[in-house]
Amino acid sequence: MAVKFSIEGVGGLPEIAAGDDLAALIAGAVELADGDIVVVTSKIVSKSEGRVVQADDRDAAIAAETVRVVATREHEGGVTRIVENRQGIIGAAAGVDASNAPHGTVLLLPVDPDASARALATGIRALTGATVGVILSDTLGRAWREGQTDIAIGAAGVHVFDDLRGQADASGKPLAVTMPCVADEIAGAAELVKGKASGVPVAVVRGLGRFVGDLDLPGARSIQRPAERDLFRIGADEAYNEGYRDGFDEAQAEGPLNPAG
Image 1 (cartoon, rainbow, N blue to C red):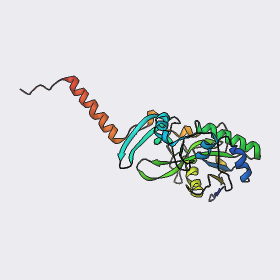
Image 2 (cartoon, rainbow, N blue to C red):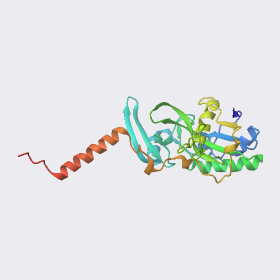
Image 3 (cartoon, rainbow, N blue to C red):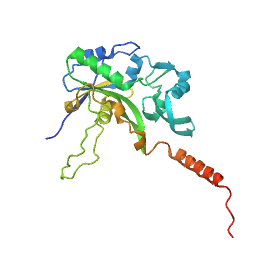
Image 4 (cartoon, helix red, strand yellow):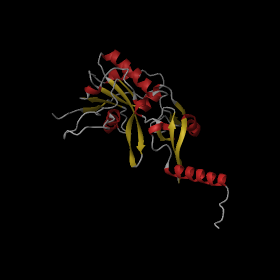
């Protein structure tokens, strides 16, 4: 049986400011039902939580949000820094972004996106009586691929993975590693109706209720690959330079080579 789902952008939301009740605004803007998944652009969550700093402090904000530098690249426009931020997300500029921010300011990501998603889901469920899931989305690039897509940086009441390991494919072959990241797929699909400049920061996905569950399900932080299984801890140039330094230090420790004969 073919699976169908739909995505609807939620219009009519006001410009969000610090202290606004997002759950109430969303619940009042769209009719929700059991099994719906509400995808919310993280920027409006950041605004409601007061995660706004002056644009002049952007570099300091990036440094404050950075846990680990993965790679840096100089270009005509300046320097691109790929870093791991406090939320465990690896991306450019620690997620500090000037787009769709009030003039003269930049936005930081929510302190704890999963907690923000959980608070939203709890509020929306209480206001509507509907068992919905919530995903907070943000835009990131991908290693090896041009362009960007939206991913889930926070989730509540949603199974972030569709774990198919141990099942069989259509040919009867066992699936050993197949575990689609449903939360990222939903976030990317929802961006097609939200867009970057449309003023529609919220979308509702219907027809995927099988992925909606309890609020204590693992959030989007569980999507981050643990360090011991991360094959790309640093960039290629950084890895080369690190290997060169290690080799040079080892050669220095061993002393000059003895001439043959």
